[in-house]
Length: 336
Image (cartoon, rainbow, N blue to C red; front, side, top):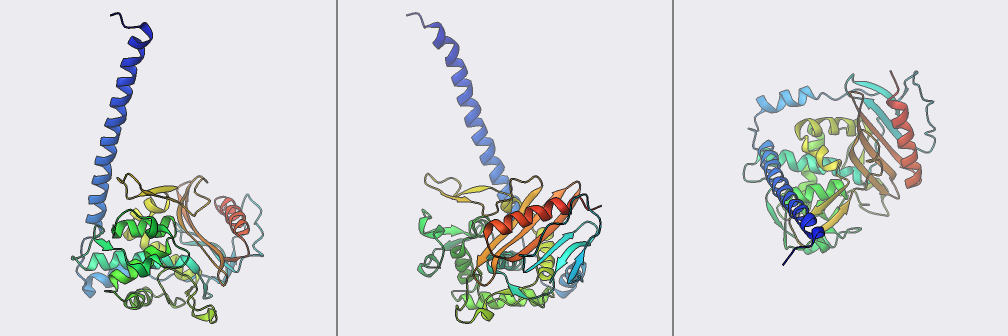
């Protein structure tokens, strides 16, 4: 039987397309496996001796940031920041403050808390060889009941890896993931992990930081002073150390969307909460909101060979936060 000409032409193309697709899937899977092994290796144990710890902390000596400062020159007019409670724009390459307002003031930080949560976890893994990013954590009922969360309730398995908890915390700001991390590394008691977070802040010289929980939700609505607090200068120091020691964090925070678990037939789709990822050079970092903290955001940006840290809190609306941050970004990258 003679094969129609249209089929004889299209069939080889279809076969080639299928072959390219599956070879791509294989190479991606191989790449993901290689990356996973690389990242696990990055958090292998370092001996927790003072001779090793002290030089590391010295290298990231706490920076002195002016409370109120604005760089004079820019090709862009400085934007309005009247609706921002506190903020900081810092060029990391030159160690230069471009703009600051109340940078050393301790204020509520909502989900910006998670930046300290993940560093505490990663440092703990580095110091304790019995743990790794691949640890499987049994999902607890208490974590699934965490307010403003739905990730773990949708997760298709009974256990989840530490890496997936960290990714969901930074990409989707999953409060339930942070609660589960606190329970797991606190040996069943999240208060133990909160103590670890406060100790980490103290070790890093973050004097304006006080933590009551691992996710940043209001600790007690009748006592807002108990909410998690920090300052822009504290957060700058925290982010500098985090991305230096664990560069894969920027891989997580730059993902517009993740599917967890990766190879599941029914993964949970998590979109990034950072609305500025579409802006060239933006690769993270974290957003947050509570009534007391207002709308908050930390952004890390690479532009023209420079690396910027930008943070604002206390905005009255999400739109105000996003417009203000974009305007600050446009202004900052044009400061000579």
